Image (cartoon, helix red, strand yellow):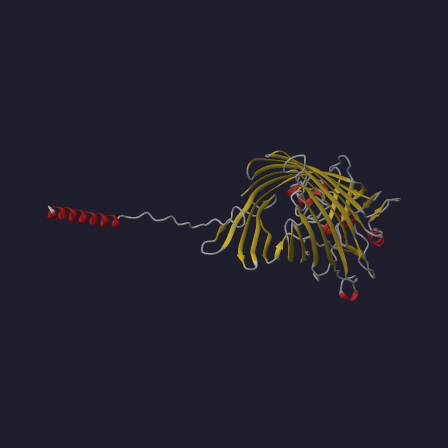
Amino acid sequence: MSKIKSLILGSAAVIAASAGAQAADLPVKAKAVQYVKICSLYGAGFYYIPGTDTCIKLGGYVQADANFNGGNYGKPAWQVVATDVNGAHSRDADFFTTRTRTQLNIDTRTATEYGVVRTFWSSNFQHSTGEGPSSGVLTMDYGFVQFAGFTFGKAVSVFQTPWGAYGGNQNNSFTLGAYDDATGVTQAAYTWQFGNGVSASVAVEDARGIFRGPLINGSAAPTAANLYTGVYASASGGNTAPDITGNIKIDQAAFTAQLSAAAHNIHSTYYGANETTGHPSDAWGFAIQGGLQLKNLPTGPGDKLSISGIYTDGAIKYVISGVTGTSFASYGGGEGGLGYNTFAAFPVADGVFATGGSIEKTKAWGFQGAFVHNWTPNWETSVFGSYTNVDFNTNASAILCAAPAAGTTRSVGATCNPDYNIWQIGSRTAWTPVQNLTFSAEVMYTTLDQNNTGTLTSTTAPTTFKPAGTYEYKDQGIVSGNIRVRRTW
């Protein structure tokens, strides 16, 4: 009996061993490999770059704009120069324009013993009215490195408030009265974080591009072109010193407040055609801005009230900033309509000088305000406005009001005062039917408010299609609008 039992047990062992060997030969399902690992250190959307400890996030948007009575992004029809004829309101002006833009941005971050090392890049690919069917423009708004409190590269100026000129409008570039740095400025900056939302920053910035106003050399009598368009040849010299900017900021759940300051070097060319004629000494201008944004308002969740005020002396592009340009000019009622043969034209300049004299700095100040109300989580409406005042001192006014060149005369009893004001008011409504898809429309009214009186008569045509003759100095009101669709990702 024991022999039979041993035989049975031995046979069972052989069968078990054989079955185990066969099971070992069967294919085993491989464990899933996570090729892209989520990085939760810096918020949603970040992933680890494979094989590194660096996190990356891709983002951007596609946007389509239609603009009425002006240029791209609702720019009012206020300039009459070779590159922008809309202010003439003649038949060669664009009564509507379009622009399609695709933005791509890449954000990378790496944790180190010195803190987070961050790089950020943002570029736009866009096509606008007047460009060929397969052409367009590539721009770079931002490209910077941040490390241990430092920022190096093209980034938003530390002078700008956190909301910039976007308090409640979608076209900040042409809403004046506040600093607009939506496309960044090359800089080296340092930020101190004191805790509880309190911080301070200081920077040196290369503001030569769109944040330096030209100088006007008034040694010669103003020509008809100067007076009719506000355009003067720039007498600004080379880049000799960066702008020095700084801010102190408090960011809380209920409000954000910021005080900013900037110092701006003013450097001219020569009095005459060459260096033997001499030149005025350099001068320094400055800008001071204060801003306040109130959040968690009793009017509803997400509502905001944003206000800011700015004063500049010799740094006019801090208050008339962005891509606004260096002149304003608008003609009334084209083709014999209401207000025909009326116009307003002003220069935008850091200062004015004449032979043997110093740079007479231009003073400018302004304020801007906006209120945003959310009707529902999907609908919001804002109202916004601004006011800008430009003041040329007595000496600068005398230079700009010198007797015009031969062939151009002011009427008897006319007064020449180059000071001017610009005020704007508008509203925007936006609908977001699904997350990150927004349809919006904006309308804005702008007034170019001047202090000249009388008429200007010239044997030279003011601009293309405008006949030579007599034109009356008169304030100009402009209505402009924009419709936009944006899908953010």
